[in-house]
Image (cartoon, rainbow, N blue to C red; front, side, top):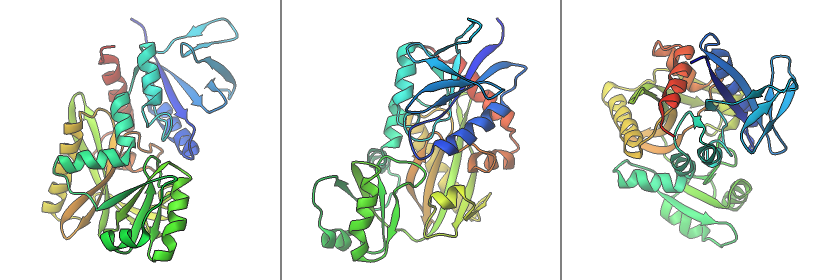
Length: 329
């Protein structure tokens, strides 16, 4: 049958571009080259291209997702390893494109990617499943809102964030009523819909899940201790946080977190990597959001959890490719 061609697709159109490039490089380095032919594909708004080992770029043909080399040889991909954080890799757009072309890819479906990227809709579904969430109000760009009414309902401090954005871009903590308008304005720079949430004081944890040939497994629970007001972009990617794996939780609370995480993953019909965020107050976990393309650089949480679980990145990446190859298209 020969070796399968795997495209590690990275980059994207959001502020998470550089993080995605690091994640993609980690995956590229950890896919077994004795089993697969592995290629790096860089996606930007301006162009999509293949990056070879000499650093040379060749434009990819968008119409069929093929690469034609200067020699005339055409590379066709058996699997796309999706490692784009944010748009278009985490909101379902590029998956829908691959669906049309009949190309297999890692991770969840276009629909589930779009759903989980929409925090408002995902939180509504989580609530229906009986998973506790923070109180919240949704704001629409261009429509007014009642600052006093929001604070009366949710109290202070508040958390303001864009509905569809990753890496905590546009998110802020509000401790005073006068700060709310500027926080909302900042969030609207990222999205047309903004969530204003009750600020829950507690222990923040991040729970990685991997689908091992059809069976979801919690890789680990990581406790986030941010040096900043919250786990923002700098805390996530500039070392301004302490990440403790396993989290310092009692056995009962850890079990609750794991059960809620697997329940949501299973009820949604998720596949592939995911990372769910919770705040734990008085032993009760409150679900915040789910990432379906979590960071995968060597310092990211999911690889840390895999190492703690005794799972190599080579195995983790290989399982993802094999599951994608087994999909019907």
